[in-house]
Each structure stands twice: as C-alpha cells, then as structure tokens.
Image (cartoon, rainbow, N blue to C red; front, side):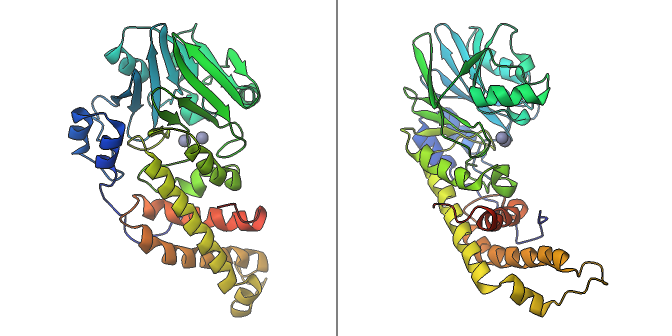
Length: 340
Ligand SMILES: [Zn+2]
Ligand SMILES: [Zn+2]
C-alpha cells in the first residue's frame, strides 16, 4: 500500500450542510445543528453524550457518533434497527429510548463487517436478526461472538421486510464494497441505507473504502442512483447524504479513473526503469522493489493532478487521496478499467 503522504493541506470546509437540511426536511432542529458544521458538513456530536439522533422522516431516525452512523425505523409493532456499530454500542438503545418506548424487535445487517455490526450484543436476546444468505455464510466462518448470527436469513436479490405496516426493501446488487453488501430502502421515508460506499462530504476512506471489488464498488453508485430516495444513510462520517453526494463521489471516481489512465500513458514501467536502472546489490533497487517506487511516481502524478480540483469540495483529501489513487491504479492492472 502506498502510505499517505503530506500531500496538500486538508480542505476544511462546511459544504453540504445547508443542502442536506433543505433536502432532508429535518427543519429547524437540524439547521441549528448544521450551524456548528464541521469539515464534512455534519453537526458536531456532544462528546459527553457520544451520539446524535435526529429524525429523517415518518418514524425513521438517523443515529451517529461522528465517525459511524446507522438508522432505525419506529413502527407500531416495534423498532427495526439497521446495523449495530460497536462504537455506538449501548448508545444505540439510549438513542432509541429518546424517541420511543417501543421495544426493538428486528436488527438488520447491511454486511458482515465487524465495525458495523459487532455491537449486536447490546440488543435484546430475542431480537430477530435479519441478513442476506451471503452475510450469514460469512459470519458462520468468522467465529466471532460479537457478531450474533442472523435468525431470519433471506435468499436471492430481494427481500421485503414488513413490520407493523412499515416496509424496508432489502436488496443484494452483487459484490461491491464487500461480498455481501445489502441495500436497505425505506420507500415511504424516501431513504436508502448503503454502507461503506459513499462518504458524504468526504474523500472515501483508504483504498476506496477497502472495497473488495473496485468495479463493483463503482457500479454500486449507479445502483444507488437507480433508487428513489432523498436521504442516504452511508454508515460513515458526520451526516446523512443526498443524491448530490452520490453524484459528487461518482465524479471523483471518474476523475481518478481518467488520471490513472493518463499516469500510465505518461510513464510506463520500462521507461521508469530506464531512468532508475535496477541493481540487485543495492537495497531497494531490485526490479521488484523499483516497481513500488514506480507506483509511488504514478500516485504522485495523479495526486498532483486531482488534488487541487477536490480541495474545497471534499474534506479529508490529505489523509485519503493518495491511497484512493493507488486503489484505482491497481484496478486497471488487475481487473481493467471500471465502467464509469
Ligand atoms: Zn464494511
Ligand atoms: Zn465502514
């Protein structure tokens, strides 16, 4: 992996908060919180409390701790929680208790990753845990008691979860961020939850959110935009997203892809070796080690080209841009150009 360098300066800005407040319809409460907007545009979390909960619409709530987020739907028959990040832990149940005294009856997993569901132990023992077959099969191999096994396993591409007259449409659109990424759509609430794909207001986490399949990760953006929604719960960072956040990240991916093509066109490995002749007697100068130096040179080109365009548009450029450049470069070598 190419280490993060001291490329550029962090683009601290308050983008998107006002747009989100308008699109989300959360009203004055969110608008007031947005006034305290931080780098990615979200409201600050009170560190003494450790979480923030706010209504999306029609019984659906957003819950976050500034780094991780999730959502829960209050129905007449009980509460459906989606994901259980361990950073939220017991605060998840405190947040629910702030808005309803109904019990949590269902817990839906978006995918198997520890950092999004290993807080499942905080939920009642009799909660129905809902997961796609691929998530259930992966969890069966993990031997991790923090991630409770699902009790309602669904197969195929779609499953409709109905509780107390409310609906969540679950869908598996193929391998993307993970092998088992599940989309959770609340049609009446015009909200979609897809985790670890889009980072509203921010540069994606390293290596395009550690996507297991970058072409699938890119395709997931188009799948997201195929839904009817106004609010996106994305699993990370400090606010919910909108369609505009998805389109912005798609634009970033296209930028990364074009820059990767240009970097390869401008500098081939043989050309790099002509300027840096291998010498296996010198540490770091074998052909194989020079390949790493070659990738550093490509990343330098990409970051220098792209960075100035994204400073001021997304936060987190400095820590994450270079790793995302590398992930796109490697995709071209290993899987070919993603469809963008
Ligand atoms: Zn994940
Ligand atoms: Zn994540």
